[in-house]
Length: 331
Image (cartoon, rainbow, N blue to C red; front, side, top):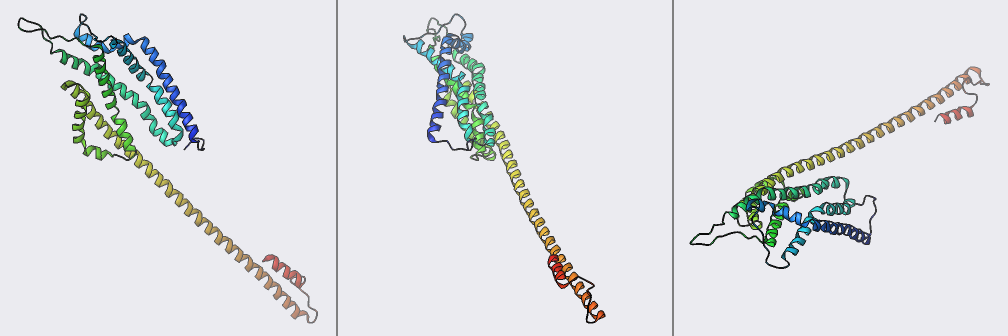
């Protein structure tokens, strides 16, 4: 529900969505311009793992006139998407958050912060660990020339190298989102921790098959991606268990609150019943006292009449009207 408890028309939702997308796209274009200004440094950073293995006397080539230009554009766009990701997530959260309850906002907020951090961790893993090992493996197929054969030497193309690096970074970054995805599914009740644990053997097969599709056809990169996926799967099971315990605790607290409210209602009803009974008893006692007072007056009047003969003197009330008035007032 909206925080101001009012329903926004659909047109206002569309206008707000347009404004959020405008800010996100504007941030992307600004960061793209900045990244294109430093594109040579960014590309040099991506090439550094290969340059350290090949040595300073090696080179990279391009075979099309526009290859380097479009490669630099791709590098700038790739870096701009990574840098402007917090802006995208912030605008998305600003659009969605007003429609969530307070407990839903507190539940989804950690995942908004965890998504870019996990993607950065996946990219750092592939850059600092997987890529150096994989490049050494691929460069091991080079051969020096001899009398009976020709030399086999790598002449890496600029565009192909960038495509391979982007593919690896995106593959590892997306796979590191597995805990976020499975934890959200567990919170929604789609999956359970026990169900994930029972399907662990299938998850291992799927993880290595997924790694074989996304990575180059070498064991280093496949194992380097498959093992982290399995570790992340186990972390997801732990997070799912924690989520289930919190949900069960919240449900137990709600049940306890409902029981307390029911007990309070019962206590209030019993107190009201006791009060009503006490009030009824007080009324009966008052009527009894009034009746007793009236009987005393009549008795006194009778005794006085018997003693004095024809001229009775009232020793009780002054006259009959006053006695009746007192009786009525007492009632």
